[in-house]
Image (cartoon, rainbow, N blue to C red; front, side, top):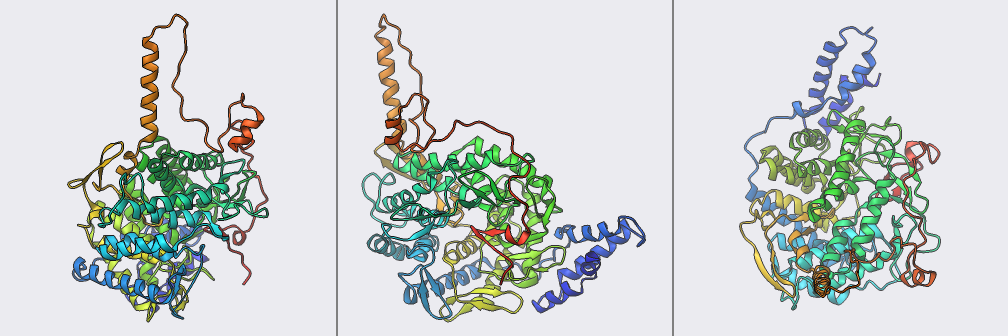
Length: 622
């Protein structure tokens, strides 16, 4: 019966007309459904009739994407429009909200949200350079050094602090020379922004002191993990560290950051189900899944993203092979005609036929592994939802073709624009510029207010909420600008570069291939090869070993290469005594042993108590 309602198209088409799209995709879908229904099940008595009606809803919208209307968007025109959007938001933050984390655009004041870091200023810093404003970049670098303090009694999100603060500072550090900042001797292996990023990251390390190596979701920046802290963390909150932490380890020479990030990734990998899927929330102490919905969206998304980006950044085959294994399972169990649904992680049965706005990063991720055709088909599905509402609702019920109750908002998220930027670089398809045009027009028409841009609380009636998240300047505006600026230095193809002399030799920077963290902070992968302290030490040891062997002592001595000693919380070798364990703060963890995963490790829960966004479990209560 659900299929009859959707294929009839009345509700869907009415919503599209209210959104100002008279040539509605809903009517095209309705026609497609009718044609395919008649072909597959010509008689209502067909035993598969109900199934056909459901399938018609899930059939790809790729073949029904509207043709370009009028001339292609003028990139130069929209670059200027995007730049104006940025400064309208940025200047209002400085005038009305700084030093708070975020701007409240409806009341023209500010609020702290993620830890009292002047977060919007950190998040916007590299966007300033991408827009060409070196003067303001230099000024903000000085302001941050004077005003930001991480030694504060604040409970901070480990995930958000990493992607926004650590990622933002690392990116700005690596871009400082390009922005005309007078860098200190030894850069990029030293510098004030790097020291700030390291300080912030060290504040997060206590969260990783768990038996599984998977971190708590919250940490107090002064006192560590609170005694009563919940051990339940979302999957993305565990697997979204390797980009920032490996970069820190490479620049500072301290392996602890990369070590804990890798251990967290391996903890998740070992916890996947027998059919190769991971759930939404896990207990980081026991390793048991608390929320068993598997998908590519909220609470899981950036885990998959960081497997791919970590593999690219570090040239790590293991990380890429892990993602490709997940990708097979995702295709087998969650993909239905270029939509991705939520399924039970152990059984693969559909639990939630919804599309979430956070899933719109997926086509961009597909493009990074060269899967362009599938990426474009999925992208165009998502684009039809944008056209229906003038934005992406947080949740979209695919069979019903409409929003999910209490999830009708659009907080100016960047994910669909991000995918458009990646895909345009790969294909040059003008449809992707049309999405950029539509995003600029929609955001300015619906969200712009006197003091900035406000979160859209409800896409159905365009009610606004009194918040402008920092990712609007870090991601949404940045990806829009880069979509319309093909000659930006970020898109460098290696034809230009800078040679920098470091204490470890000559280093090539700025040649392109930037890897964006999940907050759109670009990391120059070449920088990871500039500060090889560990490599230098390894060469010294090897030289000593060769010299020793050359003496040809009569007594045989055996040497073997070993990696650096165990990390701060790595499992020790059996021979170490108790005092050594205490001194190294090594946790008492059992030797890795792969055990069979029971099919059900926690009670089945209804959908409303399972699905989560960045660590917050949403319940059905008002």
